[in-house]
View 1 (cartoon, rainbow, N blue to C red):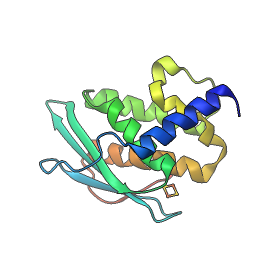
View 2: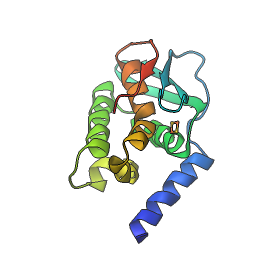
View 3: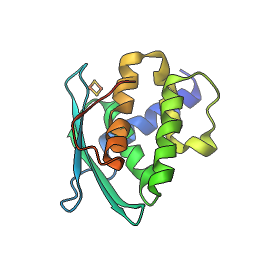
Amino acid sequence: MTELQELYQQVILDHNKSPRNFGELPDAPAVEGHNPLCGDNVTVFVKVVDGVIEDVKFKGAGCAISKASASIMTTLVKGKTVVEARELFVRFHELVTEDGDVDPLVLGKMAVFAGVRDYPSRVKCASLAWHTLKNALEDKTDAVVTTE
Ligand code: FES
């Protein structure tokens, strides 16, 4: 394992062990995501005020990758506009599904998930919270199924 891969693994383990923004937001809509491959679920709560994500939390049961991804996602989108968060979703989707360089300056801690692109089932784990967030930002409250 390279030094960078080890660092990435540490970040994932840290966010799995101590997830940021874990819990519920009683005054925000809850949107549920479901991974059909394993049966794991995540619920994302997003409070948007004047087009800005004022607060975001998540809860649910999942593997280390899905939990770490949800945790990092919340830290990235909190305080961003809805438009910026949608752009981050696109970047993340590209990161885990397409070949190409990873620019840590643009992707921040999301870059730790670059390695999952070779493992389709892991792509679904890493994408679960992001697809759920996307639905929440589009006011879709139906359960979401990860596609990629
Ligand atoms: Fe279920 Fe990863 S194994 S989300």
